[in-house]
Length: 278
Image (cartoon, rainbow, N blue to C red; front, side, top):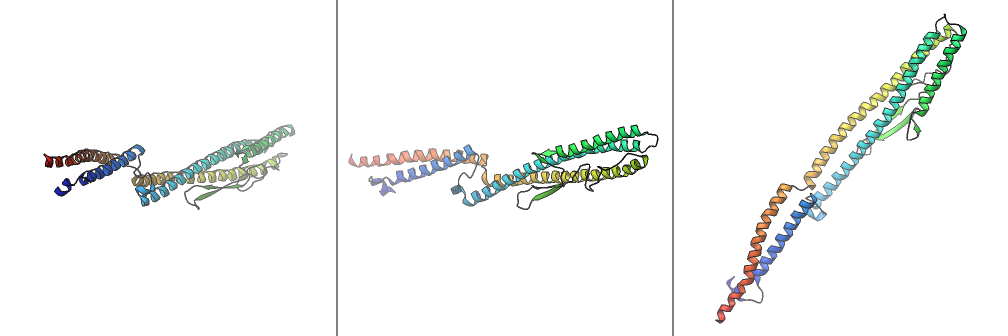
């Protein structure tokens, strides 16, 4: 090292100090960039394997979030369907009251005609509810089968079937109310059985919707947990530890100051050669 000092054509000590200073400055820049972005991996060169894994996990999280949104849409559709079925159930209960009333022999023909007209109007309303219960312009009560993608993988689907619910085919058993007659007490008594069957059938359709809703709620909870856990793993790999990064910056700033001082001293060292000429 002493001989290096006497050769001023190349200041090796200064070059070494400069190289160290440049490396320190680059390291400080990397840590400060991580602090500014909040990520430990900002490009593939930072950690090639970690970058690949983090992007796969990020894609997984994105898919799970969309699946969760799909579950929300499915629940909205089923809520509309249940509302329509419940409205029809209220109509059937009103029809049941009228049919029981018509089964009484105390009524005359005019009263029976009036009750028949009321029941006919209620059946029309039942059909109106069926045609007006829609999602995105599509009628739901037409034995429609819909498949919802409720997970992050290709096979994660839920198929939902909504029963036809018109006066000619009510509920999952397709009970026909369009031809009931209240012309006599006997025919009205027979109609009671038909209405009861329709109520039971529609109740089963509503129960099926409730089962679908329960499954979707379970999937929603599962997806939320999966999103949280997957995001936690991604964060561990990709995100910066602010405490550690700041600690590294502080350490490197001290090294930077000492390297700068060393560089200045190394540049001044060749001046000692002049003492040989005094």
